[in-house]
Image (cartoon, rainbow, N blue to C red):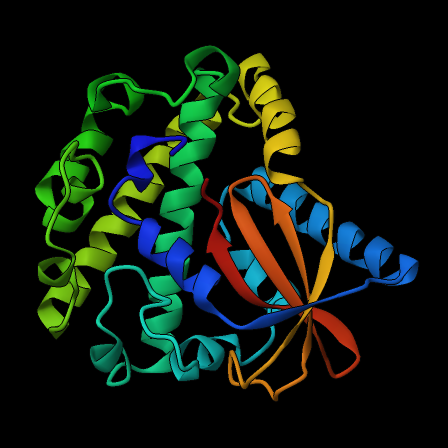
Length: 259
């Protein structure tokens, strides 16, 4: 793993991506150029805003949350019990998605703007060296966020959110941590440091950043029909999955990008 923030959190998400049934397809030159252009624009805007919120309406399919919720694979939402998620409103699920993605994105943006992945390897540093004290305090105050910093495994089932009180508390903690970390990221000019440039050069080789590939569903997935074609593109720390929605290339799925 690239950072200890992902040790206990995103492995389940990675396994789910691996278990989804896709057929590999060839991608045309026009599709490749379009997908790369949209992904690069999205990545530049996200680095500039350091907040995925204003990008949702411009880049995501209007009902992308339904795709997460209705997919036949559970737990697209990290830490969120799938049965409980069905009881939440689309607005609540969207808020959770934004909080989760902002938190994960900002963690890596901040850390790798301070420490190059080329110089630190797997970044085996203590949490207090990676994050500001007030951000770390929020991490340690929430059992689920704390689990992502643990060096030993946690009971995944116990960490799943299945009550309204736990949901509100967790989302509020994610949002608070992201707001604080965003301020620190701006302060150190995150995304533009020498360390981050070195890290990006490393990731471009390891994760084929901005190199689109085409797949299609062998079954109904993300609430879209069997045979729907997806263009997948890795950008820094996020994998994007695009599909044609009313003639436009829109994001129907975004996941944290891990080893």
